[in-house]
Image (cartoon, rainbow, N blue to C red):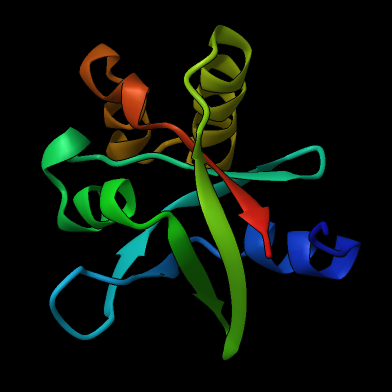
Length: 121
């Protein structure tokens, strides 16, 4: 399964999206994050590194959903820590969020290992 071109355009167009995660012992949790589209793939990264709640919940259960303009896209969060994926994601953040101080923070060395690819389900 893959994201449609329309899905990718919508995700790419939005500055912020919500990611929904499922904690092991409670209701679903949503938080606002940044997402980038590179070619036909969607990548996310945790600004707070491994300490972010949503990232910790993904480690326990990789089933997620992205909420964008009233649409819900289910996916599995796959670690994407190979050098190519990390670089593509960093380049995507710098391009999409150019001029925002958060763009450089999203490319900090200490959080690169939190790069995830969202595989549609």
